[in-house]
Length: 509
Image (cartoon, rainbow, N blue to C red; front, side, top):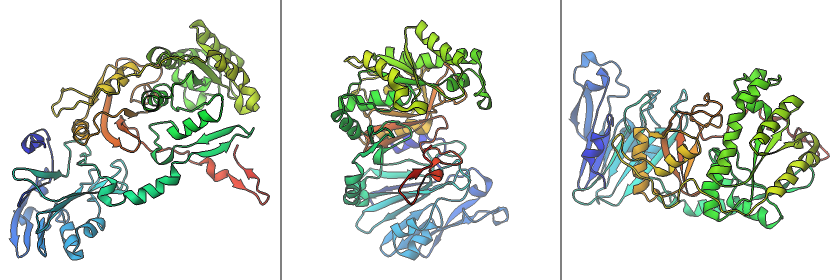
């Protein structure tokens, strides 16, 4: 249990709050605007009402005048808004909360917090909060419920609207909602029973492929499932698996999370490079990437070489650079990439699979077979390393995240927002404090700033949010402004795919 006074002391702005203990409920209001502060509590026949202290100064009553407390039969309902009336009218705490959403006061989209205390001492807490503070309407509503059979003397359960100060104000994050809390564990198991099976597909040349991310797929992870990888290894002499978004994102997740959890040990790593990407890292605008620019290409090479160094030095694995040829690439550009790699003793081969199919990847495949080695893998951080937490600024941070940031990204360290520090504490308290870390970061840079190209130095990584993916068995750390949802182009490829009357698939390329 945490000390409530200490918790509030370290939160510069909790907003509205509810505390439920044995035989008592506390509710308070904090406000920053003059309109919000112009309020007092008055007693009504069935509870408590807010009123304007000075009616002449009341600007907008819509979100500040309401019943924070009402009776509902033998139960007591306490909330921070007019959802109190909705709950009482429906005569159901859950139905009332499900019928409402967060307040429409963008960009904060103040959460609605609610509580019901039953005659037997059991109680339930709820929070309705916005999923996307960056959108115009807050996005979907996230509804969380916490159910308790009662409280011990001297102990209580607390919920507030905000985790702290900020713009927008960060919504409160409390206990995890588990499948059993929703009585949905059976239904979820039935859904996952078939969803966990990898999909067998084939390439245009008939090579089998097991494709799977399943219910745990995440743009931050970049790997397929453990089951799909193991199946592929059993059905072929050599299995190739994708760990997308470079050695800083995909490879780090694959090696530090997937390999350690499964015992899978890769024999070699292929790093895919393009002349276009290297020119972009060398300062060329996207609109000019089709033009030959050897100077910019050379300036972007440190980005590729850092990925190579991560694989070789951090993880101790052999690697091959695959130059993925584009139709606009010139021979001079391809020769420059190859020569710069060879100067440093880096294996490099041209890949023309897109244009020539399997024949275009033969040279690369032969080089990969040549360097295959059984080597012990090195990890960025030991698995037994716990996530450390503290409420105070400057206190200890998560060692695993610090290791990834300094060793792989070459950052000077990690900074945690106040909300992330509190989430570290919650992770530890709920038994998730020693899981591997999955960092959600921009794929365009080694830093958390998409505009910091090449091989940046002298920067720090900011972790703004931590959340657990309990089924996948890792903690996701959100950095910078990254979103953990897949992105699509303005015209997704799916719009051009079709099947004709003879069963032929068109629009794949």
